[in-house]
Amino acid sequence: MLLEHIIMCRLVMGNKTQALQEISAATALCRQHPRLLETHGPQLHTLLGLYSMSMNCMEAAEAQFTAALTTSHERELWSFANLNLAIVYLRGRREADFNALLDRINPENLPSHSHSLRAAAYYVQGLQAFFQGRYNEAKRYLRETLKMANAEDLNRLTSCSLVLLGHIFLSLGNSRESMNMVTPAMQLA
Image (cartoon, rainbow, N blue to C red; front, side):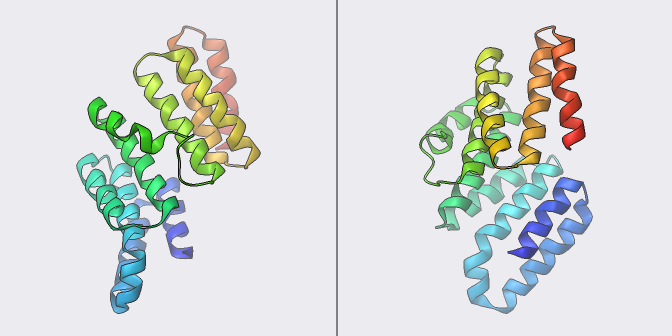
């Protein structure tokens, strides 16, 4: 689990080569013990999906998140993989595939009681509304994300939400409010 979190930190920090080396090391470790591979295989698929997203390889990311979903029995990982798969679909402008996931990523329907996953689900809904040009709805979802993310000290989610709000205000022609969002996002990041 520690290695999984280190890998995610490497991806966030942009150390993709190091992250891939550590994913390889985790895979080798799991292969030495078949029980570990069975219990941690879905996590490895998820990590490879995150790496693929960071490299803009969306087809590979989709394949890895789908593999994680078909092999995982863990509710938290299942929700996390679905949320990332939804982002893959949004980035690829695959509205029909995204809509098929909608019930699984609805913050009110998440099988997890994790506040961070629920906040991430609101962020994904805000992202979808932004891509569709529904700015007021996007702002509502992102404010909900910010409220939850601030309560849980989820700095990365807070900064991403502020940046997206900044884009929304810029799209609406309000550059001053955009700067009011982006400046604290940069400081927090």
